[in-house]
Each structure stands twice: as structure tokens, then as C-alpha cells.
Amino acid sequence: MIDAQQIISKYQLHSHPEGGYFRETYRSTELIPAGSLPGRFKGSRSFSTAIYFLLEGKQFSAFHRIKSDECWHFYRGIGLHIYILYPDRSGEIFKLGDELHSGYSHQRVVPAGCWFASKPVHENGFSFVELDGDIAIIGNGAGLVMSTLDMVSDAHGKAGSFLDFGGKATSETIYKAIELISELPKIRAILVNLFGGIVRTDLVAQGILDAYKNNIITVPVFARISGAESEKAKQLLRGSRAKLFDTVEEAINEVVLNVNNAIKQ
Image 1 (cartoon, rainbow, N blue to C red):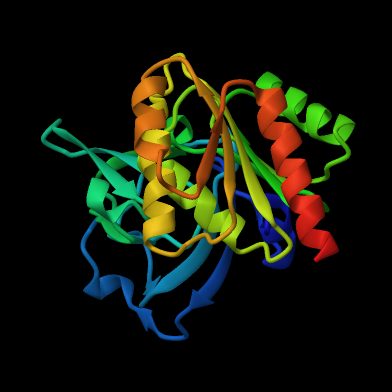
Image 2: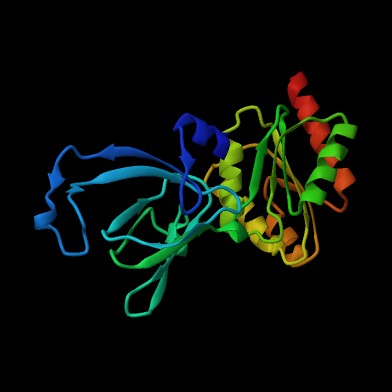
């Protein structure tokens, strides 16, 4: 899994004045002379330029204004919101990201003369860390996830990755998380430990079902789900390849046993 620091290093990005990191990757060799441009320009301008731009974690790009249209392309990561203030004082939020069915797109144009700022969509994202074991762990809340990691280790299992949804999760984000897990060939099973508060556990269950339906995952899921909408979540998962447990201890014991048996075969 490539993280932000690896991308910054790979593409030799450096700090952007408005926030985040960037590097210019293209500038046309031809120029438009100043006399052929609108009065707002004070000199000649390149036909076109292009940059890589990255916002990490809680970073944001502060409000600023440009004299030309600016085309944004989305490549990877969690979604990005671009906040637009038009000259007529109206506003709009552009959504860049992979959630096409939720109003996001891979390309938007910020018109010339607008004030605009941008920030990652933290509330719908998740933290993903790859480890060296074979059990993927999904949970909500750093404390819950870290304690689950310790319990898996105490049961003689080895975590291969963990995902923390924090306070919010949807069927779309759980689906995207499982897509990431599916890219790790070493993963033999997924352990889900959810305690519903403001998290809709039934939405998480639906994301797991969708991942099985679309053959995103083939490994078994061992789940302990309690709290908000947990009964509905359990009903959704009954009859699927996901195995449900009343306690996290039971789920951990079963997932470790399953993985160890698979290794012996």
C-alpha cells in the first residue's frame, strides 16, 4: 500500500504556498504574448501547465484566486471537496473522488476569477495500515482497533492489515476498504470488530455483502457486531460467508484457528 509520504518522495513534491504538496510536471514551450491576453494578465503566459498536487491528513488548501481556468484530476486516496465562491457571491462544492454514485467525479474545472479552497473528506475516509501477517482487521475507533490487534497477537495470530473507520462508516467506504484488502494476497481471513455508536453497522454489513456478491473477496469474514442497528446487520449477514459471534474473543479464536488450519493444508 502506497502512503502519502511515499508519493511525496516518488514525485519529489514540495510544499505549496496555499497548503499541501506539489510539483510542476509540464509547461508548454510556447507563450501567448501579453498583448493578446485580457487586461487582468500583466505579462505573457504559457499555453498550458500541469502539476501534481497532494493534500495529506488534516491539511487544506487555503482560499485563493486564479486568473485562468484550472482543471483538477483525481487519481487516488479519499475524496476531496473544493469550495468555490463565484464572483456573484454564490457558492458551490465540487466533489472529487471515486464515489461516482454519490455525486463525485474524477475531473472538475475551477473557473477563472473564483475564490476557492479544498480539503480531504475526512469524515467518510478511513485509516489503512499494512502489516506482515495474514489476518485483516476492520474496526471503528483507534482504541478498539489497537486492542483488537493485541488480542489477535495474544491468541497467536498475526495481523496483515488494519482499517479504522473512526466514528463514521458507510456501505461504500467498507466496500472500498475491502477492495484495498483484496489487493493483499497474503490475507487469509478478515476479522470485523464493530461497536455501533454513530456507526450504522447495517451499512457495514451491506458493504461486506456487496464485496462478496461482486467477488471482491473470497476469504471468510469473522465478525463481532454490536450496537446501533446490530440486529439488522446480523440478519443481513446470516447465510453469507461471514461468521457471526457474540464476543470478540470468540471471533478471534475462530479466525486464528481457521487461518492456522489453512496454513497446515
